[in-house]
Length: 278
Ligand code: MN
Ligand code: MN
Ligand code: MN
Image (cartoon, rainbow, N blue to C red):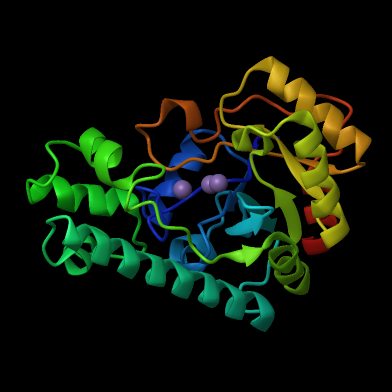
């Protein structure tokens, strides 16, 4: 059973169309594929996804949330994308992103960029605007000499383009997923670079909010990290998920369907998905 339960299409910041993602998953021998774009479910309505017979597709989403000042990602699996609470919540998330993009654009314009919002939008034809698109604008307008400099001087942590987005609180987002019949999965817990104590506090808050699973495997990671997350998973009695966090074929550390299998002794989250969705 090869399950990749965390992937992106070009409906958020992935490179591939939904059809191309499904194709690639088939070629990699994936049996169960969750499509989990950031704060949107547009890919799930694509005919290549809706009518897919070649493999099983789990409807999903990845929600950006805030917890004690940190940005935490929560994946929802087995969601009903049409459910009102979730759809309204995701729409608010997208409005928060748009407000952030307007703020970034205004700041970059004061630093020499011209028509920054429209120029960035031209690089993001499906409307998912982020800092990489602003980096392209800074380079093409000669404000920065390359993308690395664009991030170093303008967009990186602590720079003018580093604008916080007013995302939902962790427990609120978990509530949306539960309302939509989904399983909330704490995404890539090792990526937050928390201390052990802080990570346990996060998992505690996540479980209290109704979270049921954590990603024990996220792309390529060291065996140390896998063992630590497996312990956490057992200790809190959570379901175990695994996924590549695939965005693009150029990211070798997040290759579709190429992540390590789940350690034995954990309950894979797909056992619950099968029970709920036949
Ligand atoms: Mn992403
Ligand atoms: Mn993420
Ligand atoms: Mn992701």
